[in-house]
Image (cartoon, rainbow, N blue to C red; front, top):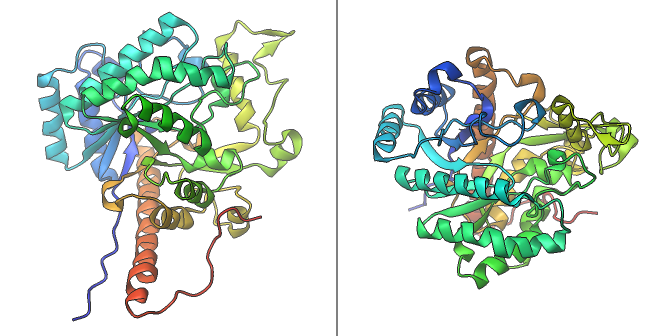
Length: 412
């Protein structure tokens, strides 16, 4: 009897920072878990399988003024008070009612901040996020490594071993995985550094994993891959994944954001891939301005040459795919299956919405946009799953080779 085709589809979800104030603050501050309940219900209307629950320091406790942050964060998970069993029971009841799962908890902050007091504050918050994850039965937290701005990257490698490894040990104590996102975070500082998150590229991921292994926490260190950051650094997903496979690390990708990046050729002509290095507005008369509303101009290092894409919002452009100027979503999903050691059915595709023109805070107006993007992601993944099943399972059973070569890694 001929075996049936069985393409493995990936769950599709959304990061709750997509709408930072889905629940008005005057309602959520006195009743923090209402924000999670309403996000789960909203995600169900979008057709999402899951959410990535965004955690962040409450605006009253943050070390960076809200007006200085171009990179949106959301404290959907409010941890000013301990996330106890009663809170967990309430949230899990909402999960059961809506049918929308919680994929992981994301707290995206600089865990190697130079100021020891600020660093300790962020570490304490991440441990509380881990406690919440454990209480909810979630298997992972996601975040950044960060960078100590007062030190070189080699010195930050030492900082990782002395300061970040303890966080991985906290994760291990709770049977969690810490998934590190690879954004270089160029706008995190008004200084000249462009790479402000140590774990920004595959060669470094491997070096960090080896350090983690020496301390018995290699299984806790994984990467939360986002193709938009690869595009920003001139990389393509297939080559990144193939490199990991070639080096013997196809297991390192443990989570995924699906967010695109569209390179602005005009901006690259003006500034190159290093982005806008001066005359941004965050410096005045040779000094960093005291006006925090101007600090976000540091992000021109990135925004002068690129703009984030909500999946499906960038026009189909095969030449741009070959030039690594936008994400080739179909090949992204194929390469994941062909190069990595993953079970697609257990690896959610988390849509992250940072497309500036559509950064609306009106959930009704934004619903068709987010729902359309999730539908696009699901359809692309279904196409990739079917192609993989056909080319790697069905045809080989009949000793038939697929046609052509496909997109090649390291193409030059």
